[in-house]
Image 1: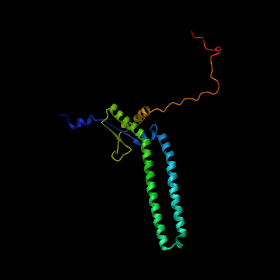
Image 2: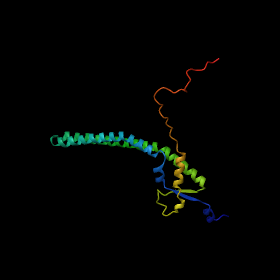
Image 3: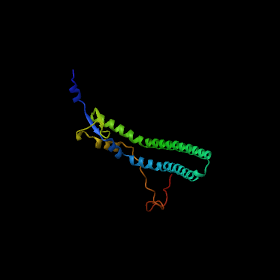
Image 4: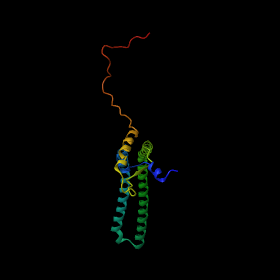
Length: 186
């Protein structure tokens, strides 16, 4: 009957730093740039909403003294409703931003999971721990760090960008010297 010690001896462990992997992952910079480009519109919308609330609050502060109690209460009610609507719109925009970020990162995360599984199987590891989460690993042998190996494999397995073709040169197409017409066909 195998003992617990022999079962543990046959297990192989390694660790990675997922933060380092994600920072250096192929496609991350493009995903981040795309996300930032998308965020410009969202930030603009949020800024416009905030500016309209600020303008409304400033106008109320100036006019508050001259308003009757009923008009003041009606104005405050309108302002609260607009603030609630702004809050709902802000949450909606933030949810859209989160969804977009997840959409952009999904292929990168999928590649990372696939590579980690491949490296685990190829290396015969029972477990690969993440030291970025770090709360449970207080000390580890640096020789068990396979972050660089995983990153190298991620770079090899990442989808390749479509090759760009150089623009055709301007001007007439070249023809071999001495050929002026097609040979006759029979």
